[in-house]
Image 1 (cartoon, rainbow, N blue to C red):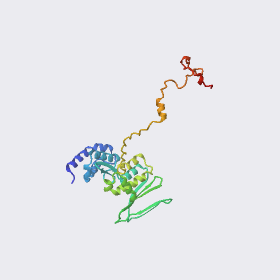
Image 2 (tube, rainbow, N blue to C red):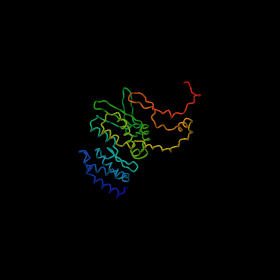
Image 3 (cartoon, rainbow, N blue to C red):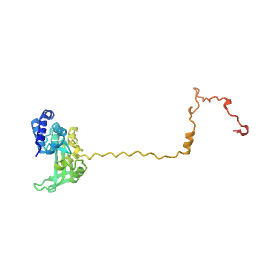
Image 4 (tube, rainbow, N blue to C red):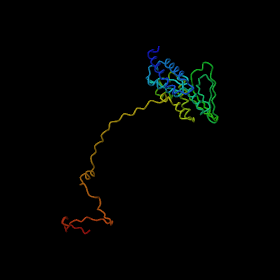
Length: 284
């Protein structure tokens, strides 16, 4: 049974936020209905009462901004660890796309092992799906069909193995909606993949990728810094020893040049020269 004080605390806070919701909601969604649906979502999901309050209220505000009811069909407020997060559902995405007029129709379906299903790629692409009326069995695939405004069709098909590969790389693959709403997350996966090839506006694309957190792989940890190793001591070479013993030369590298372009050799007094040994004088 839900914690009654916590339920009452959240109810009071959400009712006080009604003016904020009203300012964010589109005209066709009444604030009274939005508040009522939000309270029902919180009461039927005890995990939301344990979530951080700020994230819970932020998720509800995000739903209002999108104009989607958090009723589990258009959108949902889910928990990831201790954080509440807004998640647009496939029906909500289809609603926003339909209202935007960017494409004509968008259908997303799940396929089960006892359904009649066939698809073909290549020059003559097509998808044929006849769901079983009962005992449909396990899910085996999900697909997305979009009809553009000019009548052109675009298709995307993913097997359950493809979906599970993405789930395995997700940081939330073992918790949250991947466990409680697997079919919805599988449909969202094919929608996200298909959306990369569709001419969607920035707003609609932002809705599709609103819950990226639930699909992203864990953040890579930076490699630990390696302690700097001292460079091995090398014995100086013979040339280095000679260079180190050479006297510093504070003068110019070449004799100065005057404006006439002639190099002037500095005058040296002959008295400064050492006597020359005539016996060893070179004829050169």
